[in-house]
Length: 371
Image (tube, rainbow, N blue to C red; front, top):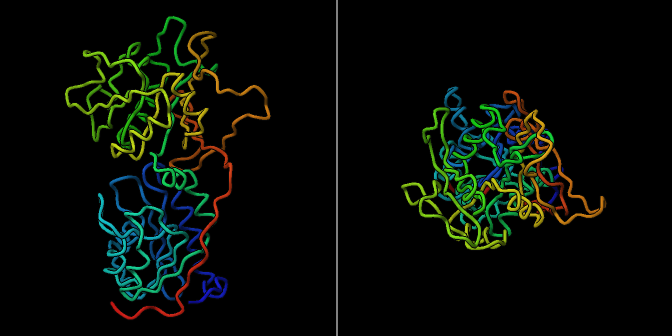
C-alpha cells in the first residue's frame, strides 16, 4: 500500500475535494454530518456535485449519482471524491457503497473515516468490489467541517442545537412574563422548519408550567405539519396531567434530572441523535456552561424591553479571560439571515482542541473483483 499522498492524488482530485467541501456547507447540521461528493471523469472534468440535505434525504454520494443519471451521464470508470467515508449500512436510505458500485465508479477518494460503528466499513466493502479506494485528502478540513459532530459521536450523546429567540437587550420575556411573540412570523416559520428536522425538542419543567408550550412542528395556521420531534421535559417536578406538551400521541419523555449530561445520556439511550434545547433561561445556561452546545441559533428581534427575563442566567464566568468564544457558521444558509424584521444568527463554538486526522491510506492497486 502506497503512503505518498502527494504523488498518488491528482490536482483534479484535489480541486474536486475543495468543491465537495464547499457543497457540504449547503446542508444542515444535526444527527448526520455535513458531506459533499463530486464525480469526475478520467480527464478530471466535474460531472456532478452532491451534498446531504439532512436526515432521511439521499446522502451526498447518492445525490451526485442521481444528478448524473438525470443528465444521462455514464459514470463507469469515473472517480468520486467525498468528504467522508461512504456508509455501508441501510438506515433511512440505502448504503452509499452499493450506490457507488452500482453506478460503475472505479475510484473513490475520501477525506476521513466514518466514526459510526453502524456506518463504518465502506472502504473495505468498496475494495472487495474492485473499487480503488484512497483516503486522507483534506482530512484536516473535513474534520473541521464536522468538528462538533465528531465530538458528539465520540461522546455517545446527541448533537445539541440551542435555540434562543430574544430582543436586542437579550430578553426572552417581558417583566410580566409575556413572550408571544418576540420573534417575527418568518422566524417562527424557520424555527418550526428546524423542529421537523430534529429528533427531540427539550425544555425545562419551569417553561412547561409558565408557558405551557406544545413543542410541535406547525405551519402558519397552527396545524401540526410533517415529522414531529419527541417532546422532552427536563427537571425534577412532574409534568402536569393537563400540560399541552403531553399531547395525545404519547410522544413525550420526562427526564427527571437537572444535569445536562445526564439528560443527554437518557435521550441517547432513547435513540435520540439530535436535540434542540429551547429553554428556559436556566436550561439554556446550564447546557452552555457545561460546554454541551454544538450549534447556536439566535433569532434577534429589533425590540427593546429594558427589563424582564434574560436569555441566560449566568454561565459562571467572572473574568473576560474565561469568556466562551463562538464563530460564525456558514452552513445551512449562512451565518446571518434576515427573516422578516429579525436577524437569524448561526454560530458554533470555537475549537478547544485540534482533531487529529487518520494517516492517509492509498491502494497501490485496486483489489480484484467486481468489475
